[in-house]
Length: 402
Figure: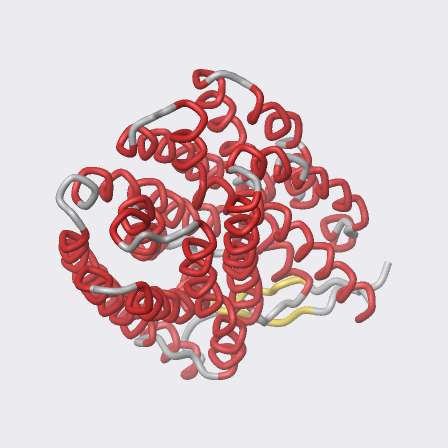
């Protein structure tokens, strides 16, 4: 067997205090970014928007969040910028403030663009912090990091239902206080992160070896395309839930706006729980198998969801959230093993592509909903997890490194 080439990264034991702190920062970041989609029904009524315009709001956010991320990741792979985390949260704060006072559809677009920029700056560097604090437990570290983000995405709609929906658009400004809390927490993280970079430069800490595979460039490119196709299937389906689940429940079952937000909260809570499971399972059993089961395994439940009663919609949405969410941590770590030493690029590419697919999906589905119905788009999107069958084309990196 060929010997394994290696490159080095900062070595240390798993630093759980930093992992949970950056996870909490991710919680705040994604909570704040979940506020805008959560108040779509309010904006739709106040500004007399159609579903195409609702989709455009999401598209602008997702495009600004996705296009910049790979470039931020490539740049920070070469030259880390710890304090960029604070700048990212500051963009989000400004976007929320403008959203709270926006007087037209175009001001809303500007506000979500700022929030998207904040996301594009936050994710690559925060992923690197999680990687540095992992102590080699990369799947676990990504799951803890992703848990914060998904929990924030779940809590955001609930807080919006309690704070904004009953009292109006201006109450979005209260979320700026949460953004200020995030800036303070990220300052603590950047102090640790800067210290780690200084130690690395001074060679005062040991390093651990990161195994390299022996795949050809063509195979690496093909595998990355498979992973991106899986991200497409996962996030195109998820955007049907995050952007239109409340409208689906209101239209089909006559649920109130606040009641629909509670259903969305339970789905996103299941997503958060599933995220925590995926990384450790990938560390133990192999990431390829977790990816396969996570995406393809959700298909039977997504296919049933548009045809059942309200009670079973709630149950199936929880099952779907638990299963489909376990894939992202495994996909991200698998990609870092395909491209060792390029954590920022991988994080930027995959977070960016995920957001881009979410934005594109929201715009397309909004247009489709205007021409057909909300229930129809759920029937169409139900087939997306079947794309998970292509996971079989991925090489088994664990056996390559054994």
